[in-house]
Image (tube, rainbow, N blue to C red; front, side, top):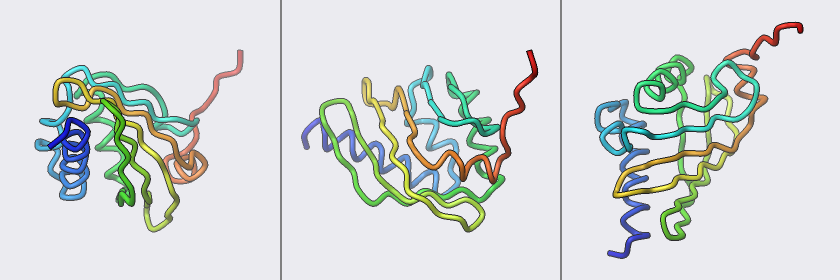
Length: 130
């Protein structure tokens, strides 16, 4: 199995663990210093560092019955791109996640998706007047 195929299998195991609600198994696939970048202006948007912060994000996502159904995996070296359907409380849109793999673990995740849908379901960050 090539390095790219191994990386795709790693990411597939992560999606399976997320779908099963197996947080322990999911966390075992992540680098201790994982960085997760969630775009937009929703209350869950931001950059999360480490498993502790990411665990908090995943818990918030679970509150809205978040599901992700991958439809395509594309690998190039240490990068795996996943195209899929994202559902929150019955509303569905498409998204793309870009994973960087280091030493057999997910080291970075960048999410590209429907930020307006996230704002509708999680609320928009409040901006303080300056």
